[in-house]
Length: 421
Image (cartoon, rainbow, N blue to C red; front, side, top):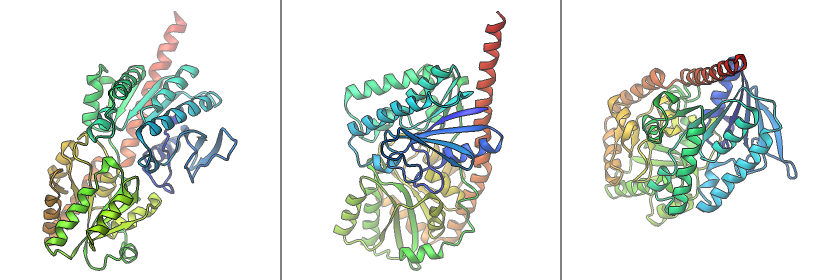
């Protein structure tokens, strides 16, 4: 089976963002399938497009990567742009990718993964051009997710995105959703439940492990022997990391100097956050630079707990990579958004849910865990067990392979029936 896989933000482990598409693509190649990955080559140190070229081709672990001169590849860059400029860049990638797709070998199926939503337009275009089925993966419900965190308020833009989402959902032969809530949202738009498969984000069990040595990372970050909590990922509006800064201020006020908070990553709000920490003279906040994904596990191994933080109002259907990596690392998770993930953490006793509007509850949880190392270690063991039991990357990749195979088989059967008649 030849799969045309479309992901604007595609990155391998040498990149600086999520690697779901890389890991799934590598799994599919290992099963004997051909994978052609369409991605943006702009702001992309891994797969750049030289000036004057429309696209270039690369090979990464058997995946044929076609990077086009349109949009941008780094989602952290997107957090620094205005909403209208981001949308312009999204359309730019969709157009460039649609043109490039027509020059590629005919696939058996087109698989496009959102975000952004506009990749679905490329998926529809390529599917029609080649006359093959189209599968769409939903990683966030747009426009709801943007509205909830205050990133989108224009009524016309909201209407336009909702209209686009419905069009893509109804055109897709099958849809993959990353959380139960996302599946429910898609079904509310009129899609049959049988046409939506739940495949959540996964844990990279070989990359993030409890037995990694984090001593060098602790030393580099200057953590000493303090109890460390780490947030790793984007630092944009939706992430709401002023919540963490406020929790650090409360800890400092309480003279809980044995606790340190590590903010590892980049984004549009990073400068504002560093200025806030500096203004409050916080000695218990450490900022780490954005690094390739393959370097993150050592940093997590050097810390005691992981933070999954979002701005109040964040859609509780979300499915952030960082939480599943934290589980694989065998670290307790402190999360400030409820929903299915909050329930998951509490039900499996692998962390705590703290109030999204009260940073003091994060401070309380950190004090509690720092004073009960046995509980902290047990939660970490529970986290790793949960990752192995329910979120093994290979198990979930096999589920995607099954979806794609079934869609192709169904399309071929329909074609044969039409030919006979």
